[in-house]
Length: 147
Image (tube, rainbow, N blue to C red; front, top):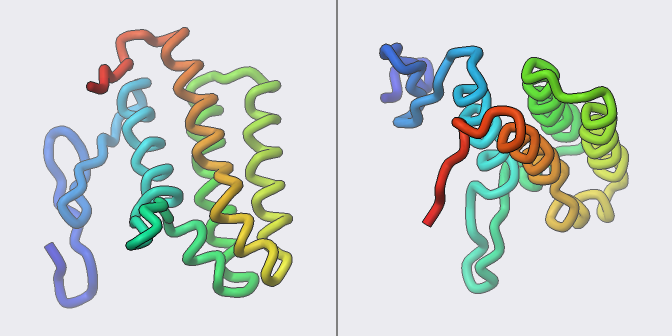
């Protein structure tokens, strides 16, 4: 999967495959849901801290890099809001989602407090919850039964 220049992308009929991860490339609600869930998983719940059994994602880890880390994670959080806009969420929901990302970015600028807050305030998880509520109501065929 990794070429000499880093991870390789392989195209398939269903979507692009990155490091063994297949992401759908369509504009249908099910594809958007899968992409948003993958980004949220990457940012908020990628790893578990041994002994504490607490999920941690790239948002908390990249956020440790001053300024640049916060810019990167804010951009990735804004991607989720952009996908929500493509789904047709109301302006109220988009404003709430944008406020979640903005609050996460603002608190992330504080040197030590912001890094600790990334473990507690998970803006991308909150935004995913808003998107899932919308999809379950407006596009029930995208529901995934977990069990």
